Image (cartoon, rainbow over all chains, first blue to last red; front, side):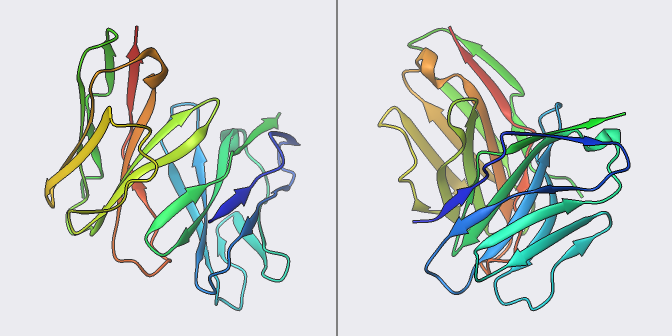
Length: 112
Length: 115
């Protein structure tokens, strides 16, 4: 069964600094996708970034990058130049076959 | 392009009543998912459909919960009878294909309160 682990319930970062949110996963399937979602206080789920298990390079989307270490089964999200609007819950997820399972999430607070 | 549409946004009901949550996926999407989010249990996958067929309903809590997808543009999640512990935010999401690289597009959720 899929398992996604986010060990940081809460993180703080100073505005304009970079922050790394941790995610590890467990699967025996060689083909899978890793995703990060943002959930602001308004409640919607916003897709941020995707990494495929066969991708050779780390994914990047603007200020978001995914530090993918396949052998360690980790897929950490790096947010550069944090902004106040980045304060939210962040969820790591894995899609293996049809379904998608989520980690428990990390609450990020950006300090001015 | 309209996103995933859920209704109602908020639902308050009394214990024992039937509750029906509705979802319209993005046109052309092959997969539809129902999730439940609570503080205690996080985001739980309840059930998902592929081409209107239920594929995995192992996350459905008990027989009080049922989900249907009569056509490609509509799905319902029904709770009968409802209980206070069913209070949560229920999300519907849809995606294309099944290549492992397709993100889910979420609706805005239905906040259910059972008193």
